[in-house]
View 1: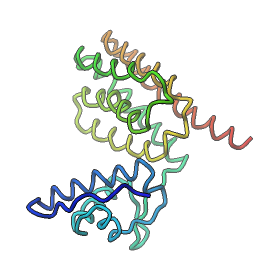
View 2: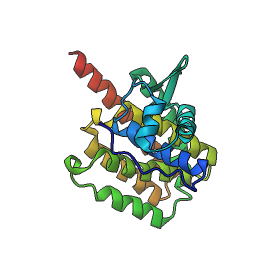
View 3: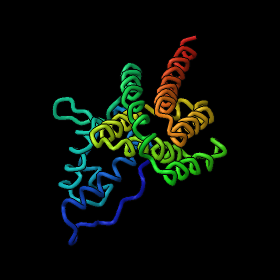
Length: 224
């Protein structure tokens, strides 16, 4: 069951701010699984749930559709489903462009940024106590932080979009990646801190290769 309705914000607030509010809440529903993959989007019901009129909700849904988090079949709108083939393709693209981002970040990311990300990673001691939202927020600190530090705004935008698609696949399917992923993140940071562009690129690509391999291994295990 979805979270309780938000208060009606339709007083003096602009349509843009209402749409932004709806967008944020709907993203939470998508990534938490409250709106699961393949679910039919019911605009009127969502507007009632959010305590908003349909106009800002429609604007938010249009934005989410543009980000490919929702998909359309005729006049009907559904929560997007990311297939195994799609996630493998996405990780292949991320391997290429995030490797480049890590190479560039090795000459641009400040020591303060590096240490802030390192502290957040080390703060997650027990994977069993870390929620999916907290894990993804932490993961974003590294991957989005490196993307932003690359200095290439279009590269950063594309990485952000592909990470959203990755999240729609469902991280909870790979719990064994928690500790290994932490170690790989720290290794990437070590290379950036050492200003070693080659190592930063190689370690980022290795990290994404291992994520891909874990998915393949999981699926093979299910078939046995």
